[in-house]
Each structure stands twice: as C-alpha cells, then as structure tokens.
Length: 134
Image (cartoon, one colour):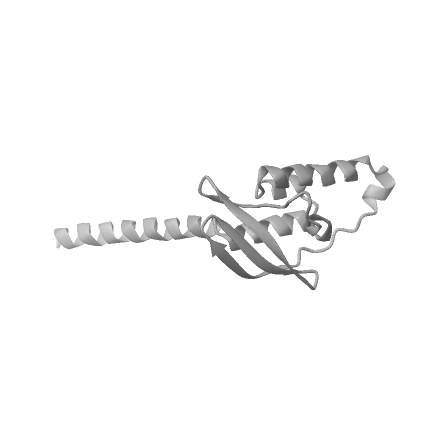
C-alpha cells in the first residue's frame, strides 16, 4: 500500500507540472500575446501593451503616448476609451514569425509577431498604417 501512495503522489506532481508547462506555453502563444497587446492598446494602457511588443513596437507605442501627453488636459480627459473588444480569429505560425487575424471594434485586420529569444512579440512597423488603425 505504501508503494502505491508514492506512485500516486508522483503521478499527481507530474500532472501538476505538465499542466503548468501548458499554461505557460499558452501565455507565450501568438494568440495570447496578440490579445493582450490589442486589449491594452485599446484601453490606452500603453506601458502594458509595450510589454508584448518588439523594440520597434515599443517605440511606436511611446510615440502615441507622447502625442497624447502633449494634448491639453481638457482634450485628453475627454477621450472616451472604448471597452476592450478584441477577438483573435486565427494565427498562422511560420517558424519564428506569425500573423494573427483579429476583430476589434467590428473591423478585421492582421497583426505580425516575431519570436525573439523564445518569446512571441507583436511587431508593428513604422512604415505600416496598422498602428494608426489600432
């Protein structure tokens, strides 16, 4: 009976470790990263959105943040932040890059991601009009 208890305890620990690995993999999936980035960006939570972006994306986000910071306070306070309304439809992964199709505020668009040092990050390009659409 004692041997069965050890086996059962080992099995439980193994299952817990396995499920925690899957959870962390999901948090590092293109779908998860895209959703987090878009939701925070829509809410104008630029510092949070930047955590899910490449260096290029972070620079663009700081640009938006600075522009909003230069607005007169009464104009900045009148900005109505929409409720986060993001649905990730499908992500296509190509080795270290991905393209995710999403719907935000009833518009369908795509988001590019790169896998850098094992971590998926949103990659907005300066020349892209995508940042203006967000």
